[in-house]
Image (cartoon, rainbow, N blue to C red; front, side):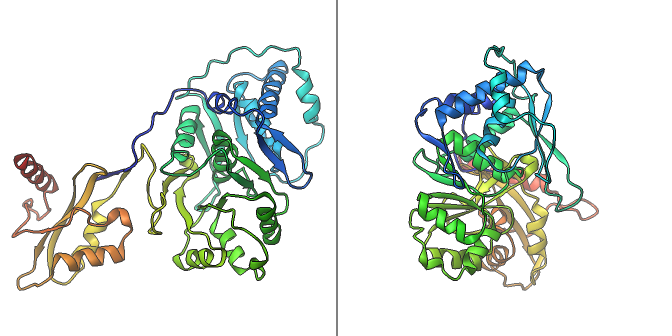
Length: 409
């Protein structure tokens, strides 16, 4: 059974990832792209564009070839973004590590930019669906950390899905923070990719403390934030929240772990922020799969554009089968204009049972997330088609439903 995003599909162009971003930011060269809170330094989109090309030429001049892996061993600084896109533009693949300690014997960033002044960068032929853009390591929460490979095409797709107007309200007028590590997919996708593509101004915050965060929100009039539940919990515990003006915040995105309803409601009450969107994603899939899309907080929302989820009917059947008065049940996907398919339950009652459709749908809603709810309803049958060994013939049930729908049309 498949559930498809109700959002309209979007076109995913077959271009290299740096081409997508760099061609877009040429439209606003004078706008500030980055601000370093600690030093006050700024970088415009035009300066970023020029430095990326300088670095790409320098890297090519010292021997970087297509598909060479380049390790980024950096803290959250503006130059991180320049180096990342410079490597990609020169045809390299980015391998990201968390910073631990220092490395001696390296060229300075300034010297590296100068190397390619007289060097011409040839056109790098990228095959978007085959060539790797990123090697990103998972967090290791369920086992050993592993490297995940993301092509230029999958990266472009992810950015455009997230920046879809129905998903994330990025605009060129937004101001956001770079306060979490970009070595994780969540930080990378929101700070150095979606934010740049949308023309946001990103503030680099060196001190991640709650007070520093609130001061910076007030100072820079931050409008869009990408948080984790830990960030939200710390903000809720901060005793002097009322001292800071955070009224500029329009939207808060949350991912990285489940966000409880209690914590969500407390955060919205304390900071008077209505648009808080819980999202779900995986480093392996780079990165976001579902979002609230400005709906009430129920699970993790709906699939992003072009995404289709497979739902195991057995999960719904197990809940229904455990109810008193149910003899047997099968759940199948029936056609739906917006979602492709929606779950519908076909139930055989035990003799004398008074269980109703309302009883079944209520228990399913209480037990499972929104994608597994019986949007197609419940239909009671006298019997279900079964094999000689008693196994329900799901295929025949599906065929009967489709035949009835065809006849009714």
